[in-house]
Image 1 (spheres, rainbow, N blue to C red):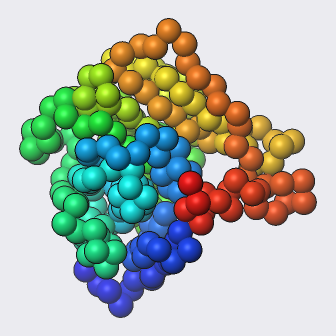
Image 2: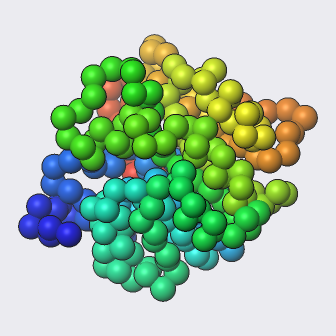
Length: 247
């Protein structure tokens, strides 16, 4: 890994250090929102982070005591290297295992079936035919479904999730809700809780925080919406608390 071309960010009031590429793919607020959303139940035995990037979501959950152990899967070698580095600089490496492989290939059999109490993923948002592809390979793979579709992520999540305790938490664009539901359902996953995320009160939802389970609940919980900005276009109080790790 080329440390010279890396940048160090401190989150959770400097309680967590995240090294990531200075250029190329870098995590956004979506990752912090997903960590907060997935932290509803704490003190879990294990968590898998599919497409973990630099490790931001999984390491946040580990640092917050949501899970006792973390397994991260990342297809891009450079981002995988960053996740390993970040586990070490945060003194979390003894509770982590990161693997560098494609979630669609035979290596997935390394992961024990029906064993994870929590699976998280911040998957590529867009199909390969939507929008302009980035000229940067890291961003291109992270943002578009070039190396795995949402259905691929859901398939693996269902395979490794505990059939009763397991939860699959993701962040996904609100505009692709129908695609989201179809991708989950075709892999026998059913939405149990959802939070719409709005940039401003007067604008439509842009992001969905979604929890699904192997067993279909009688009803889906539509939690109150999350607004990122207040009426003065400043960060909302809830967003400030999430970024600070105050939850």
